[in-house]
Each structure stands twice: as C-alpha cells, then as structure tokens.
Length: 244
Image (cartoon, rainbow, N blue to C red; front, side, top):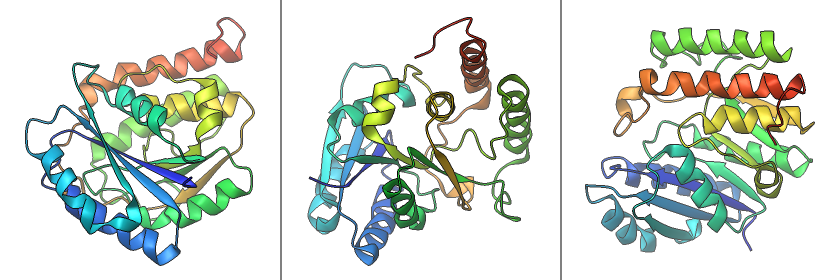
C-alpha cells in the first residue's frame, strides 16, 4: 500500500501533463517516496486521457492509475472527492496538472504528516518574493479573503486558497467535503481548523500562470463559492449551523 496518493485532476491538460509527471517523477525518485499517482480525467476534449495512458510505462516509480469520469459534475471539488474515494494511500496530495505547483515540497509535506499533522499546505505569503508570479487581481482577492477569515473565525491563516497541499486522507474524508468547485480547498482547510486538526504551512513559489494549461480558475465564477465557505465556517463556529 502506498504512503501517499498524488491526485492529479485533469481536463484538457495534454500540453502540460507530461512535464508535470516528469517533475513529480524527479521528486519522488530523489526522495524515495512510496506513492501512487491517480490521474482523474474529467471528460477532456483533447487527447489528455490517451496521453496519460501512453505515459504510464515511462514513470514506473509513480505507479500511475487513471480514472476517467463520465457524465458527472464538472467542478474541481467533485473531481477531488472522486480521486480521494479511489485513493489507497494514508495521505493524499493535490497537484495541478498544469505544472504550476512547486512539487519539490512533497517530501517536506510527508515529513510533517508523519508527525501527526492533518493538513500541510503550501503558502505563497510567508516568504518575500513568492507572490511575484500571482496576478495582482488574485493577490487582492486573496488578501480580502484572509481578512474575512480573520474577522469571522478569529484565525490568521497565511494562505487559505492555494490547492497545492497534502493531508491525512481518512481525517479529511471523515470531516467530509461538499464544495463542487475550487472552493473545496478553503473548505478543507477551514474544516480541519475548526475540528481541532493540526495545520502546517510551508512556503513555496508557484510557476507563472502562463506556464499552466487551460487556466480553469475563473475568479468571477469562483468568488461567491469561496465566501459561502467562510460564511458556513463562521456559522459553525458560532453554533448557528452544523457544517460537519
């Protein structure tokens, strides 16, 4: 049984998937990690699925498994839950197929999880310079979101939204996630926090957005889901609504 299940949600990522797997393979082999890599294809309209199938033989250390979803909810959160349901590792890590994440942090993630931490998240807001590749509009909304979390939950969190993270799979599945879009990431973070779980943040710098694949995150469609999550968290904290 693998120690870590690396979940790689995909949708039309044929341009970047191979380079992402190459970076993962370099990290995994260098650190001798015991992993499985679960590629979840969400009805790609390009040749992402076929490319993934052809790459399995070139990365044996990744122990790649491929899941093809059909006629299911298209959102990122639903894809993450689907991958978690099929994962077999004690821990899971979310890795973007567009190659944006600093996957060299995975060995450090695992070290933290082995000490009893429930969630380890990459943060872009601890170390000077790590935000240079984040567009200004995203930095602004993320700053507002962090202030909302601090105001409503009384917690200062350095990075509430970045998806690159690793976590105790059973712990997170027991809490449950219901968000179908990218707001599954702050939902996961805030539920672990409110449940008394331990969270660690490690600094990292994502690659420029233009190096990514299809730029699936569209702020106007995601912002309200993000604030709905923090509102639900606040209502849970005030004992007005049970969130989990």
